[in-house]
Image 1 (tube, rainbow, N blue to C red):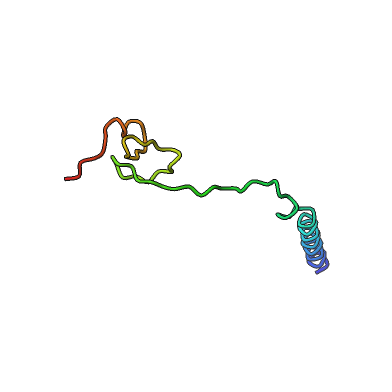
Image 2: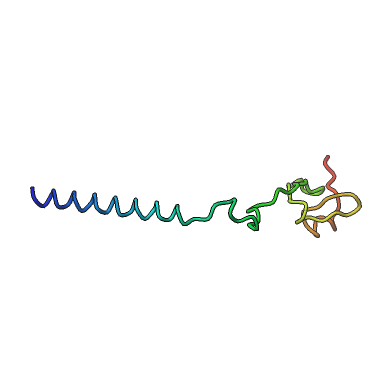
Length: 84
């Protein structure tokens, strides 16, 4: 019985020690308003369908030829798909 109580006391000590560490990390973490120079994690970008295959691609990753948007140089070379 004494070993069980000692074990439970050890578990409680570990629990409170970890809880204390987590609360200390929250206090030292910088807030969003304190760092105005921080850049946004992601940028919203327009997705366009490829004129050849129809796959949606971010506009910055594709290419435009003769007012048609393509996902790659190869598809731009092949031209728009002819859907029958």
